[in-house]
Every structure is written in structure tokens, then in C-alpha cells.
Length: 450
Image 1 (cartoon, rainbow, N blue to C red):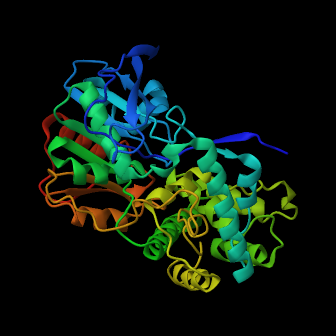
Image 2: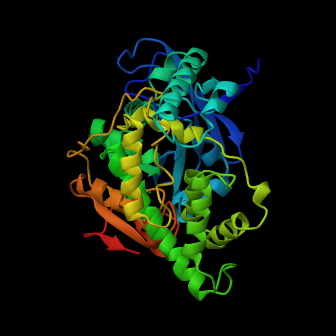
């Protein structure tokens, strides 16, 4: 029997007062970077109970230091330690002027990499590598498979498995603040890390000096609306791709009907004559748009449309995304619900059909308990926050960023008028605004476009 352990992860955890171990010991672990391990309560409802080691890292300012920024990692499943100890990654995250004048500190969220990682039997996990349900029987089979995976992961991982949501992570962040000796934090949150950022703004508004939410995940809408908004964003990004392909001879599909070619691929996927499912086809086409890599989208469609697509990559279940179930309850209760949602997403996204980043098939019977389900944001006491998003972001839609900004009194929405996921380093304009905000706590007076 194959009991090969699979390392999984999700971005979440907790904090308030430094536990008995007091300040952590920081040791050199990379060029211009130091690492430490903080002892964190498994469950912040019982701060004196069991603990685990949370890995953290600190990249020193390369010039005159003006402060410390805590980076809340993207994901779920991304390592903040890897990000701040690799200057190439750090340079993609933050403008060079910010890295020059600020220490940048991050961590592996609970369940991720070095911080009590989630462990599962890969043979059981493989049972989730399946197309979306095609009838009620397959829907029921999915529920059973997810329950089996959850029971196995819980047993192998231990108590932290049931305490992985972003309210716990927010408290872990405040423990990190205490360990750093900071009264207030500068915070840069990216993508799924913006959920922890929103939870931190709710729980510790007085501890925020500045906060940038970049590539904003809207945790305040239900699973159905999240899927519809994501599908619309994917369609809008695909429309940008089609416009480029129509006018630029560098597109390998230039001069052809791109929409018709993609529609034919969906017909084959739904008929079972394409070696990937319809949902995977959406992901393969939409995902490169978040970089944005328009030639890669054209190449993907051309390759799948080739006479012999037998070399197409096998489907895999996006397990780090699967672990976001801790923050997201899925309201689909039957195969009929899936069909109705598919009709809604197809109505707003006739070309790409669905969202490439929702949890429709992954969190129906979540192995990770939904302990922090979606709800309106309650952060009225937070200081002014910069909400930053690309206009065309198929991963975290601009519409979601608008919705979050509307729930943060005094916040300013900065829009990168282009494509891509994460906008802090997309243009000189966004770089300047982010650096100015961290350095001078100064936001534009009104919502701004770059």
C-alpha cells in the first residue's frame, strides 16, 4: 500500500502575547537574511495550550532603514520564508525603494512548509484527481472521497489541522509583531494573504501603521457569487488576449477565429475526446493571463487544438487551493446546484465558461473545516488602507477589490489599468504610490488609476 506522504499547506494562523519562550533567536540563513522559529498556540482560544513552531525570516533593509514591513504570503500554500530569503522573489513582490529602506519580515503560515505542515497520504489525495461531477452519483462519490482525505490528513497532521483559518493567522501575525518589538506594523498582503490582512484589520486595527492589500481576495461574498465574479474576470482578461491576438502577428493564432477554436476545445472536453476536462481547460487558458503571458495562452490553445494532443499534461488537483476551505464554506449541496452555478458562470463568461480559481468542486465537503466562513468585513476602526488591484486580474477580480475597499472606511483603491495578478511592481506609478505610502503613511486623496 502506497503511504508516501504528501506535503500540503495553507496560509493561516494566530497571535497576541509572546508565549513563555520569549523572544526568538534570529540566526543567519541567507545573504542579508535571518531566520527564527516562534512558538505559537495551536488554538488561540486556548493560548496556554499546545504549541507548534512557526518559521519566520527577516530580510534587512539594504540602505538606511525607515521601518519594518511584514509580508503576508500569497497562496494558500506559499512560503513567506522562501520569499524574503530569495532576493529575486522579493524584488518581484516589492519596489526596490521599499526593499532598500525597510526590513521585510515574513513567515510560513500554519500548515505550510516549515510551520507544522499538513500531511496526507498521496494515494488518498489521488482519489480527488477527477473531473467535476457529471451526475448526483458522482457528486456523492466526491463527498465520500473528500471525507476520507480529511480524516487521513487530520490524523497525520495533528491538532493544528483544525485551526488553519485566517483569523488564527492574524493572531500569529500579531505574535510576530510582538517578537519584532514593534508597537505597530507596516503590512504588505498579497493575494490570499489579503484574507489574513483583512482579519488583522478586524482584530488589531490599532496595531496597523500602514497596510497594502494587493491582488485582493474578497472574503465577504458567498461561494456562488465568488465563482461568478471570478468567471467574469477570466472572461474580461480573455477578451484582452483576443484583442492582442487580433492585432499582433506575434500571436500564433493571429488571423484565426480564436473564440471559435476555444469553443471547439470545450465541446471536445465535454464530450470526453480531449485529454483534459472542461474545468482544467479553463485553468490552462486563464492561468497564464494572470502573469500576464499572452503568447502562452495562444500556445496552449494551439497545442490542444493539434491533431495529436496525447502529450497534454495530466490533470492534477490544486491542493494548496483546496486548503482555503478553512476560510470558505461552499454552498453547493447537490449536483443540481452545480448545474445551476455552471449556467450562471457561463452566462457571464461565454468563452472561458467558468472561474479558474473557485472552489466549486473542492470545498463541498471540506477536509479542512470551514471555521472562518465568508461574511462581511468588520474593520471600521482600521486606519486608511491601500487596496491595490489590476483592472484585468483573473485570479483576484477588480470587482472584488472594489467590494473590499467599500467595506474599509477611509481606504483608497489604486487600480493598475492593465493585466496581471499583484500590482505593486507593475508600473512606475504603482511603485511610487506604494513606496510613498510605506515611507510617509500618505495615501492619494481619492481612488487612483495607474
